[in-house]
Length: 95
Image 1 (cartoon, rainbow, N blue to C red):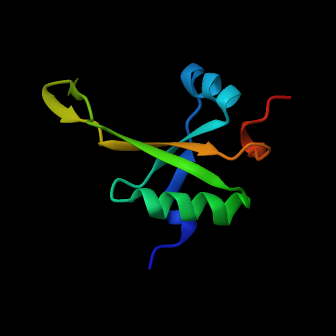
Image 2 (image 1 turned 180 degrees about the horizontal axis):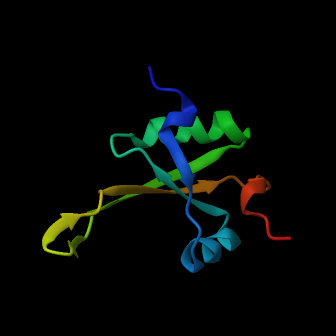
């Protein structure tokens, strides 16, 4: 069985992810094989919040040129988690 900390890799920091905070939506980079129920359980267990919805996005890695050869960046999976009203995650709070 996977640990909850293994499912969620890190929070995504971008303008688009910070715009979602107003609707109580948080964006995370998750393990590529993680399912929506695993992501929901991991967020609820780590931060003690109630999760209403989980939307996932699979992103293919870009093909980039490295000197004389072509390489590929790794594929990523993002999860956009909507929390119940009144719940929040402190990592994203701006000072």
